[in-house]
Amino acid sequence: MALGASVTQEGVQFRCWAPKPARVEILLEEEGTVHALTREAEGYWTGLVLEAAAGMTYRYRLDGEAVYPDPCSRFQPEGPHGPSLIVDPDVFRWRDDAWQGITMRGQVIYELHIGTFTPDGTFDSAVTQLDALKDLGITVIEVMPVAEFPGRWNWGYDGVGVYAPAHVYGDPDALKRFVDEAHRRGLAVILDVVYNHLGPDGNYLPAFSDDYFTDRYPNEWGQAINFDGPGSHAVREFFIQNACYWIDEFHLDGLRLDAVHAFHDAGPLHVVAELSQAARKAAGQRSIILIAECEAQWVCTVQPIAQDGWGLDGVWSEDFHHTARVAATGRSEGYYTDYRGMPQEFISCIKRAFLYQGQRYEWQGKPRGTVVTREPAEHFVFFIQNHDQIANQLRGDRLHAKTRPGVLRALTALLLLAPQTPMLFMGQEFAASAPFLFFVDFPPGELAGQIYQGRKEFLAQFPSYGSPDAQASIADPCEAAVFQRSKLDWSERDRHAEWLVLHRDLLRLRREDPVIVQQARELVDGAVIGPAAFVLRYTGVEGDDRLLLVNLGADLPCRPAPEPLLAPPIGRSWSFVWSSDAPYYGGPGIIEPLTQEGWLLPGGSAVFYATTPHGTIDRGNSMKEADDCHGSRQ
Image 1: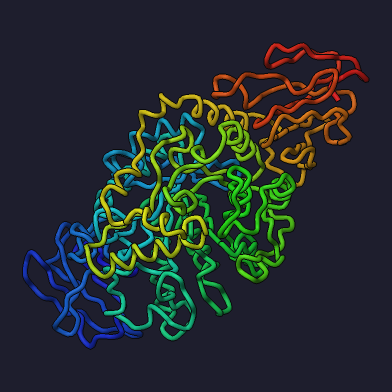
Image 2: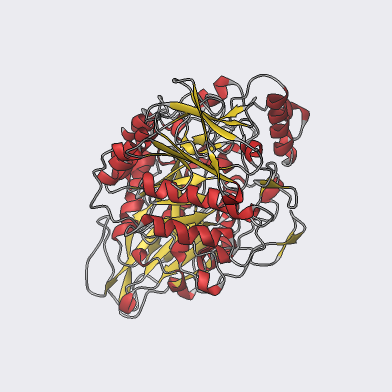
């Protein structure tokens, strides 16, 4: 790294950016010795300390008084308020030399939180579940933020030591072992990073410079990062180098950038675009993916830098989640106000990735989103659950607890067979009973009280959560039980096996079906065929089309069926392939929707059809195929 502590043959080279103090020294904790650094241009300080070595702890002493951890510390063994540890990154022996990285196409993402993913909540214990994820059909693990934070548990978005993996999860080598073991299984790992703010406890950057943060831009999580004001060159270097550090030293396959709509930069090259270029350079010959969370739904995130875009590989589509949530629960309060969960919304999302592309958004009282044109489907990440959307509820309960099983099976089929890149949240694949609540660990006092009150005020945007009884029942994020209740119970994989089989079968269909694997939203057409039902038709080669019918409502007879998308291609017949009603998924049993009399779609179901040429028999469920041209399944 250009900053931090770098082990050399002669000793340890220290370098930091600290234009604020007039004197910067290294205090070696074990030795009790102090070593002065030399001031360079533009506020940088550097020095080679011969007595220092890997394994020692140190702090920076500013102006001969207060001592602070290194802003670029690789590890904080006692947490963000303690000393920094000198780490030699070259000691670890990687076994992933043959790993070439990944591109966005064909990926299935699995979001997880290290602290609640396993009972022990460590990087090493997470390795024990990698085989299960591989068997499920996951290809990319997205790890929620691990930057050092105060306390024993945290979501990760209150990180303050952005270079140091949180000590409660393990040391840097433990994270490297996790990535190395994932690569051995053919799994990629990307890391969620937070560059739009720092946490409220343990943020010592202002002691080194007043230019790290700015009040010139609003930020709902505290002061905004200064990416374009005075001193911003060094600030940009600090965060861009951090992105490169994770990619280079930890062999990560990419990053998920939190809330890029809160990155304020009026300069000629947006900081996200500069980060994209630098991170890819740091990856060398490996291919990486960079994904944005962007509530504002800016398509520039995934457009080429040469076309004034930011050059990322993916962006979350909140619209798909929101309409699915409303369809599943029937409730459109709070920030779901602008969604109805209607069939047309699903069709438009599949075809156009975002629902809001500049129209007025009533909840915010202004236009939202930008126009999507030819951007490939894989650039858009779809999900029906994630950490935010599960936790932003009164009880943090998961979607299976809020809707009928048939509806959730149908929505799962839509998610996993859509051309966009799907993402699952940990435990979703086996309908985990554990909630995922918002949790932090601040000591009793003013800050903890503010966090608790802020959580109540946030949830009050939902009228049902704003009532006195609901407010009184909101869990205190600092209670240990809140964190413990959010841990997965992996024995449920066996007890809820029908959900696991559903996800595994759909992911197998996704990667093996030659039409679905195209991931071409421009080759998908759709039509509304009922109050809560719709059909998607995937165009294949020479009439080898696919049909996905989704009915989120009651039984729907389509007799007659005046919708051209239901007609089979010329010279072919529809051939039944798959149904979400199969008993081994927990369904009531399959009744094929298409008969000689027409269509009858069971309520709360999804069915999938392929085509076969006339005169062939290809019944995936031993159902007889009609081969008469005009009497075929129409």
